[in-house]
Image (cartoon, rainbow, N blue to C red; front, side, top):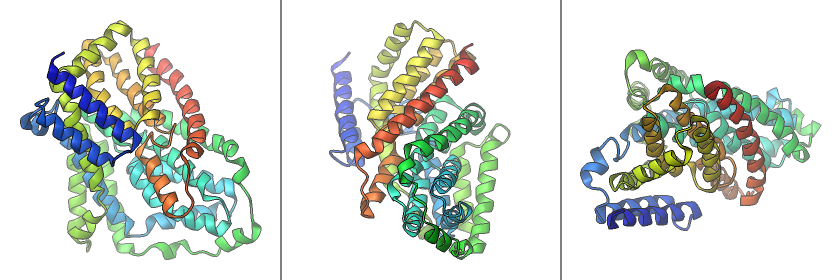
Length: 430
């Protein structure tokens, strides 16, 4: 490799290490790495900002931006508080029933929104419900984080790694529904059963407190009914447009931006209020990450890695699929699955191309998605949703340690990926 290629590898590994260890803020690490990539001419302005293969993936950036605006408006309606109180009452104060309902709500919401946004909205309400029922909040927060990663794996917009994969592979919202959703439904059911065993010591039923929770009026949580109707109507149209992509030929990013713009235009929400909930650090992090990965593409590092993987597996479909599935699970457990998938996507694209673009080789993308999404559950730093939940817990005086989270996450990851292995094998490899 050239000197520039080695420099690109060194810069990337150093920035990646900073992101994984959280020695510095991940946005600073990504932007710093991107700046150095440009400084050493591993990539240039044209490639970084305009090249589809090695530049910033604007489809990912604007899809996230549009969905964040929509969710920011939804947050003002009080719908998420309504759902949490509704779940507590439907569970009649029974701790395990409550956890099961919160898991289903979180997983379902994560499929339609993104998992980070979902836990940001659900977790604070969990504190209220657990306080009223005198329940330890940590098990519920951990379960919600794990559920958000599992549920988010089912759709294109549910988990940031899926957005990256879809953009790189040319996959649609419907593709994820057809290939991922059936597996995820099974995994959510299994996960609920696992939680009954994992958190069994935390389910302490208090009849008096359960009776008190039944007196709450969930309808009072709705702050603006007109805005709620408008928001849900726009969100429904956005989801329909995602599904009808093969007919409408609008990219998900365009649909999300149209939905966000429509919502701001037809409601009383101001532009300032709408963008106040946008997670700008996340968007900037993505941009910096794409530039760093682009440096590896431009210097030929990605090509070398993909050729090495292809030679090691000798193009054998089943072996390559299993290596991608379990390798992605392991690596996503150690580092955030977002930078991992951003790095692996061009490699998988090369593997698919090396197979002649054969239809069966599309299983590589599903192996990458399943491994990265579910592997992110293994440790406290494996997925952005995990980090967010731990941060919320710390700010509210109930810190969750790395190992407290990880000892549950590892079990869930091993079980869910073990179930996913025969799914891939039976559906795509036999």
